[in-house]
Image 1 (cartoon, rainbow, N blue to C red):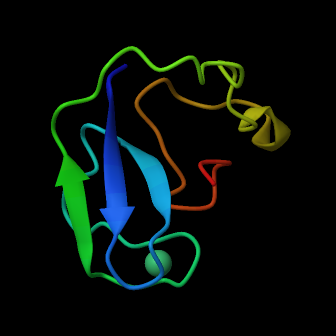
Image 2: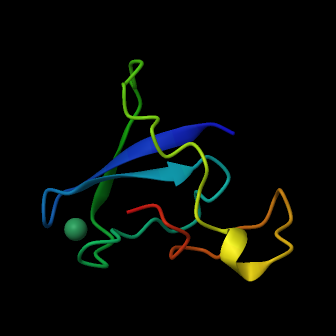
Length: 73
Ligand SMILES: [Zn+2]
């Protein structure tokens, strides 16, 4: 599933959001809504966390997301 890189203009944080959750992106650091989507995302060697930590809730649908607190920080 593709991820989009976002940059928070409030606290200068950078985070990733799933492509489908484009409704209202909020910064996981400061909860601010002033974020910019970074379209040009080169192959970053940051895929160490390929498995999100959403296995704690047991059965997790592939299209489901908790909407923010699923280990995207
Ligand atoms: Zn922020």
